[in-house]
Image (cartoon, rainbow, N blue to C red; front, side, top):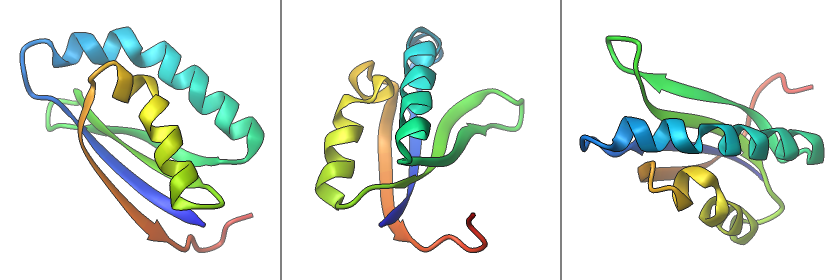
Length: 96
């Protein structure tokens, strides 16, 4: 099943630094997910100043349980970057 993950970063003084510290590991994880077919697309949510304040991802997992297991281990979760996460099942159009 396909899912939309919308995740917002914390708004405290250390939020930007935590994101930058976890970013490479998060992107490495996304590359592995792309290789195994679970990552469809994604990217940063920007504020009006162009600063990263969150993320959106289209992902595919066989079950919500597998998605939940993945998200618990993502560097943005373990690094306390994402503090508000919303997950919705979706059906993407025109997907190759």
